Picture 1 (cartoon, rainbow, N blue to C red):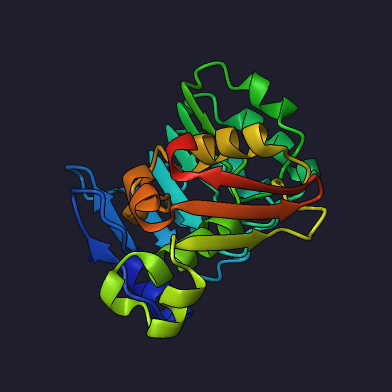
Picture 2 (cartoon, one colour):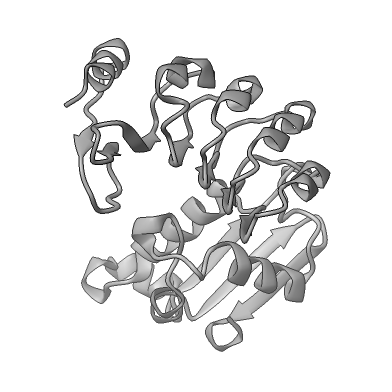
Amino acid sequence: MTDFIKKLEEEFNTQIIYSKDHIWENYYDVDKDGKIITLFLRYVDLNKLDVLLPIAESLVNLAVIDCKIKTLRGLKSFTRLEALSLRLNNLHSSTMGYLRHLKNLKKLDLRGTNLKDTSHVSSLTNLEMLFIGGNSQIRDNIKSIIGKFNTETRLSATNKELYPNHFGQLKIDNPTNSYFNLNKLEFINKIRQDLFPYTSAEGGIEKIQLQNAIQELEVTNGKGTFKINKNEW
């Protein structure tokens, strides 16, 4: 373990594992010279990227998921980055201009950041993969419904009587939610785009799991109320 990783663990009271393979825990990887090239962090309250400046020049892959990042000012020092995940950080569009320094970036994940202006991404000429949109609240609510209905033995007699067809209800009443103003078809397409490409371990929802658990989902949002049959996903 490098001294820098030890310092991070102590400062933020977390554990960061060494791993050559991608795992859904906080981990890091090094090159043959012992320099950190990959750092994957979740739920670590970094607040700003400046904390990582000591390893900025060596990092190739960086994920800071739900790490309370608000500004990207420090990105100008991360010039080797090829993959960057900023998922679930409350970023302001005014800070997106710092992305222009990442000339080698190939993969960028902005899901759950609520960013609407992605014009700065156009300066990333080597970008191959861009993930935007998504909403953790929608994902978590749907997972909650799945958890309630995915096993017959978990349904109480009362629930079986109330929900004979494994019927789930999803209410979206926050106008800032990216699913608030979608009609039925738009809602389905957005779920397909935001959640279906990813496994549960990757923060998504597996289509077959949703279909097996919920026969029909009733959605209420700014467009009204509509029902989605399992075969419509």
